[in-house]
Length: 196
Ligand SMILES: [Zn+2]
Image 1 (cartoon, rainbow, N blue to C red):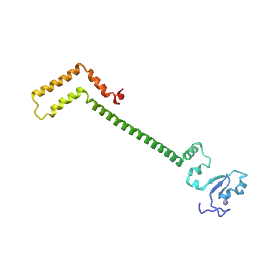
Image 2: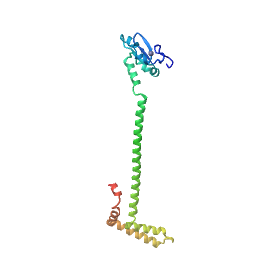
Image 3: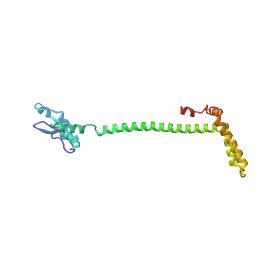
Image 4: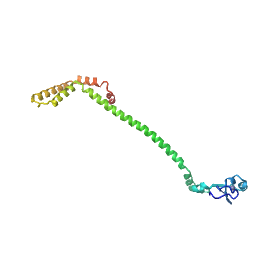
């Protein structure tokens, strides 16, 4: 309606349609403030339609008239939740999800760090256990066999076997000092708190 001007105010564009049950007028801003309308309004109230809005939203035009209940509900549904408002809600949710993501990333980082700590502590404890007498004896005997450049003689083989036998049988009989050593080396380890 950009080129349609008011017949009463030729400088002004037509913006509204006003009407009642008997008559209709195209009106400008200025018309709305004059007694042009007020004169007629004594008989019956005018209704007003903004033309630009009506051209964009048919439901705005349709809602001006008596609608049955079912159709009223349809028009209300169209009116509810304007797109801009919905975008704001989606935006807020997106921001919150990003915040949650940051928190979750931090938790994952902490868990990874924790897993690394546990592995390091285990490795440290195993390293300590290498000092346990019976274990270092076992290791020494096996390594002695492995590192031998000369062919293992029957005698050496028997000797190692006998030594190993002594270690294992001794431990089967009495593991008190083994347990004491385990306790000694693990006393400072964090690992033992994880298992309790
Ligand atoms: Zn006018």
